Image 1 (spheres, rainbow, N blue to C red):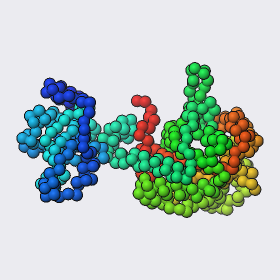
Image 2 (image 1 turned 45 degrees about the vertical axis):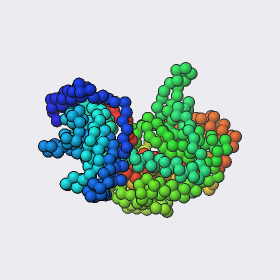
Image 3 (image 1 turned 180 degrees about the vertical axis):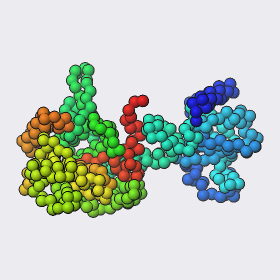
Image 4 (image 1 turned 30 degrees about the vertical axis):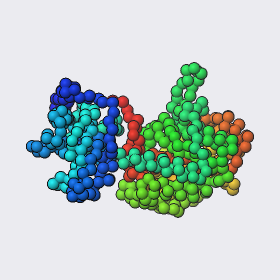
Length: 500
């Protein structure tokens, strides 16, 4: 559509609105009382034949957006949409009052109307409302895109989600599944004795993850504040306070790059379980994801791209260093010794062989993590627990009793991306203090994602936190998996966009 054509359409739509006003029609009425939505009518009567509908003489009153207008002499048709289903409306001049038929003549694609009439089937066997009354509800003053063939411009879809929902019916399904996922997660954890809480989104010290925060300022207190990168340290304070099972589903904010899997504002589930360890969380996670998939998507086996992903337990388990060692051996066509990942110099040499860039500030653990991201992540399609991470990259995790260079931590990978991160919680205040101080040294060395010092959290641990395990699951990425969506922007109603 050219700019001139669009301008002409806008002028005509405004002219039709003025004609409706002259007719005495309330063009933006305060309310309307539908008896049923279009989707309800289709569900209740969609399988009834013409004879059954004729005998029953079912009258209804519904409303929706006009997505088609067709005229065939005396026979005129509208298509109404309630966002979930569409239903046809039959318009005859001799079945309506002169005022209502004039309303019909002044309708444009996209207008909202209410309709009263009886259900029947046309000669083409389509379920239809034979209109006896029309009420005008709202005028669509701007032409809808591409005449209902679908909104395909990605930027427009994300910037104007309302248009996306109007012309792309499958979009609503994604967000209906999203709603069911959140409800199913909440129900699963509540049923197992977890208490849902809310913790601060503005924090004086950003913590709980290695990420760059958004910075703001509180005028009355004249202090800087940070949008939270994770709720972890507050939830663990509650564990110190005696809440043995606790969870939160809410927003996190990270001032980082954007990608198909990253949005600066995203939804996380975090939960903490006293007296458990990371192995307990593996079993709970398998149970949780299978349950949520069944409730929200209808099955534990879901398509994702060219793959079929099964969320049926048990999931594969592999240690991080073993995954890196095996991948590096295959890539270099030689046996990589496990010791190569324990020595900083040997690990850096291995990275050089594999053309993976590392920095002088990285120890053996950080280099190993970089190798894992480079060699392994994309190949983990079926659910895989990658466990036992280097201590260097896990400042809040508990070390293994027989290996201080390794912590009891896992990340769950599905469809080539990280879905969950969990660990046995570090509850030794002296060791936590040491880890924070090491993070400060990394920050001084230029790592602006290193963890800040949180003295109050250390103080909380000094009051005693029981053995516990905690986990974070990316809700947006879980929705991506269950809806076969390949960009996080497809599962966030209003993703952040660069201003035009």
